Structures are given as structure tokens and as C-alpha cells.
Image 1: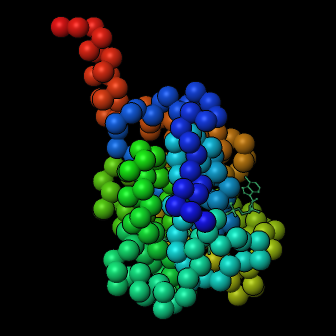
Image 2 (image 1 turned 120 degrees about the vertical axis):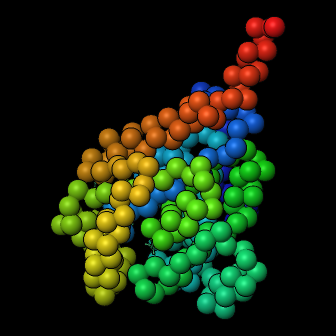
Length: 226
Ligand code: ADP
Ligand code: 5GP
């Protein structure tokens, strides 16, 4: 898949593209939450905003039967991952669930800046902590499942993880939940419709922050003369 993949073009779908101030630095959105909480489902709500692109992570995990390489992940060997680490190609990387490694390639942030697009990262709590340090304006969102029972039901209904993997993910879920207060926004994903609207609203609301609107307002001010 090319570097232009998974980019929503500004203004393509609706007038929402207008909210993005031309000349403003791209926003980096970070979405975290326990496995099965609904991150991938809700990330789509941010990607529905025109002017966004997804950061395709590299992972040493094997693709699940339904996963197309290059769509949500680039699947790489341990040796390839090591090479990328040596080349400093990752903005951040971490070992998740004590097993596989996942990393955010720097090239997506470079591309987002080049094209003036907002970048969406779906990464774990370790990755989010690292991004907070490196990208000070990053906007972080934590997705919370309605209960442990429902989380387990969702992971099982996905039908893509072994018993061993399910146990590992559920054990990790509690630990990850303890990081919720480090995030800017919390979305409880009980009702998908409402949670989706909340994620969408966070995206739009962030674009409307006065700190981001300076170039646009200054241009408008010029029309007033003086
Ligand atoms: P994650 O990316 O956090 O691992 P997914 O987005 O893959 O989670 O969601 C896990 C499963 O739960 C999927 O089958 C998804 O369709 C389902 N799901 C997500 N949100 C909800 C919801 N609010 N209610 C019911 N099922 C949901
Ligand atoms: P999964 O194997 O279910 O796709 O993802 C496992 C975990 O890895 C999820 O919490 C996901 O957010 C996280 N993850 C995916 N990509 C990255 C990445 O590039 N960096 C980090 N730190 N975590 C990631």
C-alpha cells in the first residue's frame, strides 16, 4: 500500500474540512484502551473527519486471518523490526502484552506535516506516554469498556485470538485502565453510536481550539483593515 493510503482528503465529504485552519500544525491524535474496548471501531470515527490520516504501525505479530497487510499494520519480521530500530525509524516502539513488538514509523508524522493532515495513532499506554513527551500538543483519548465481562465478550466475539492470548489481554486490561487519568479525554464505549459521536466531537472540538486558529483569524482580521 502506498504512503498516500488511508488519507481522508480535506473537504471531500462534508463542510467539516473547513474547521481545519490552513497553516496550523497537524494535530496528533492518540487512541488507547484495552484490547477489545473498541479502539479500531472508534478510530474510524476520527478518520471520517476530512483531513486525517492513519499511522500504520509496524508489528512483529502475525496477521489475523481477516487482516490485510498494510491496512492497519505493516507486518514485519523480528530482524526487520531490529533494523528499523537501529535506523531510528520509529517515533516510539514497545513490547505489548510481553510478546510482540509494535512501533510507530516517523515517516507518517513527516507525511502528515508535509500534507497538513491530522495524524491518528492507535497505540498502547507505553506508546502514548512516549508520544506525550515527544509531541507536546498531542491529544490523547482513552477508550473504556463498560465492564470486564463485556470486554471478554467482545474479544471472544471477534473470534481471532487463542485462549492463551485472550487471557493475556484480559490480564493486561486492568493494568492499562489504571492509566486512564493520564489521557486528555475518556470515552466509555457502551453504546457505539454515542461513543462514536463523542470521538468525532473531540476531533472537531480540538480543531476549533483558539490556539490553532491564529493563522485563519489573522487572515480574517486583515479584511477589517487597519
Ligand atoms: P480494539 O481495537 O480495542 O481491540 P475492536 O474495535 O476490534 O477493539 O472491537 C472489538 C469487538 O467489539 C469488535 O467485534 C467490535 O465490532 C465490537 N464492538 C466495538 N464497540 C462495541 C460496542 N459499543 N458495542 C458492542 N460491540 C462493540
Ligand atoms: P493488536 O495486536 O490487538 O492489534 O494490538 C495490541 C496492542 O498494541 C493494542 O493496545 C494497540 O493499541 C497496540 N499498538 C498497536 N500499534 C502500536 C504501536 O505502534 N506502538 C505501540 N506502543 N503500541 C501499538
